[in-house]
Image (cartoon, rainbow, N blue to C red; front, side, top):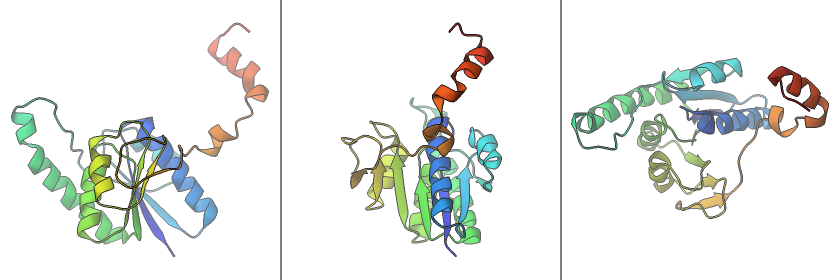
Length: 185
């Protein structure tokens, strides 16, 4: 049985494609074990469990944009988060780590590299975030949503969408949606 660890969080920009990918993997192979990795600060704490996937949490590692004490604490925070991610990888024993960015991705990529777990990066934005820039250098598999995204090994695959979005019958629910939001037809 295959096990996959999907790391991403913070916003819907990271969690939505993570969940779409998790759903697609399970559709392809119902026996696959998907575990998600996030931080206690993000949207993943509610949407991942609501989607029915187990969620492991590690400490977030934000990168301050200004020089100061917070920036000086980044190496310590990163070390702690990498150790936490290593513990999850050692317990889950995934065959692959798929990263979607956010504060959880950098320590997940570095931990996966340390344990020789293959890495797949998915970048949702035209301009990649720092974690995915680093992650793309650790793998030969970087999937992107925009054809000209500047990442090493970038392969244009588009944005994974959950079926609840991609198969939404907009015409059938239009009147109900207008009423729900109090919009004039």
